[in-house]
Length: 527
Image (cartoon, rainbow, N blue to C red; front, side, top):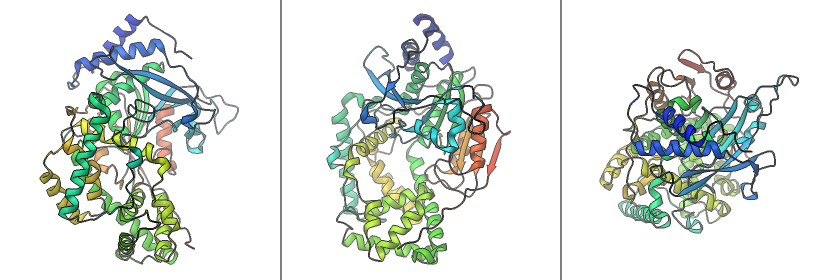
């Protein structure tokens, strides 16, 4: 259904141009031509609306979810130039109060979600409305997900033949040799070249700033005068850029597991901080396993659990499990346990079973899945393009080697794996963006809600404190002594209460809120 055209195209353009300007006293942001281009694109999108219908089979979504597309300029400095189409999904507000079936809940508009990455798709987000913790929000809001530019069917990016994307089995040395480093440098250079060769001149337009501009066009296409948004992880940085570029277009915003938006942190230093933080979370996992030594038999102390892990890695280096799970795949599987503690029982069971002679659980959890290669390659390409385009990176290998050799002495678990993930940025062929100074003064932005788990490794807690400092009036809610990445709508009722009070009623604590940690996962019995 097309959104109603409340203004003529010319009148809408004028209105959008005026309201898109930063509030009085806000810091100047780069890209005046792009700001005008966003106003043109948003005015066009408001008139055209967004026609929702049945989702294509390729999206693998049920009939309760509708899909559509919105057109955005590839280059906002040339809004009438090449256009790309972003895929969008929606589940309409149910209007049903889960606590009172006789009460009809009034609709509050669209709640748009970005799951992070960069490179992750939000197309499945509307399905979360059936989860009990989300039903109150689903009653009041249309739940809207989308695939950002480059992701899925939204002008997809590719840097490498997906059939060659998974390299398994692979090694994962915590203190790599010089020959191994040279091999990885060569691979990083080849990957950067592949991005340029496969994408051409368009590569430079896959940036966080353009993602924020796309979000404003999507807002207009949905018929929303102001945006209600929830971003997780990288989605918080996207939301912070949006709040800086378009403060008068913000209704309510939830920043879940906040990236540190300090321009000096984007992105090289944020990755160093992440590697350091994962060492602490890896210790949390090992201590939990040690407390359940009677179940897993991996050791009664964190040090003993580490020795069990190292023994498995050494054995896999000599003989990969199932011919495809080596130390690299082992490290990748256990890295995910640093993000989500509900993975802890499964990973501990797989490690225990492997050391006792049964490799099947480890192969299932850590082995590559060829059927997912195209999606994984696409997500990696978008992640790389956006982060490399967004900001300056060190271009001398000596800098990377120095910083990460030092860091690996105290944080060996993720440090070098993180280097190899991001090293193409050292050899990136596209021009770099000027980093925006994310900031809003009092009265320039409606109050926003920042959520953070105190021991989150993927987005260390300092990032939430920095984001709150930069967005005047922002409120921070902390889940203490917890480290799950992404806490909205999860198992913590206290956190969910803050989110619902804000999104449903606009209520926030004065400046800070605090929640006890959610319950630790229960161990599963290894057989």
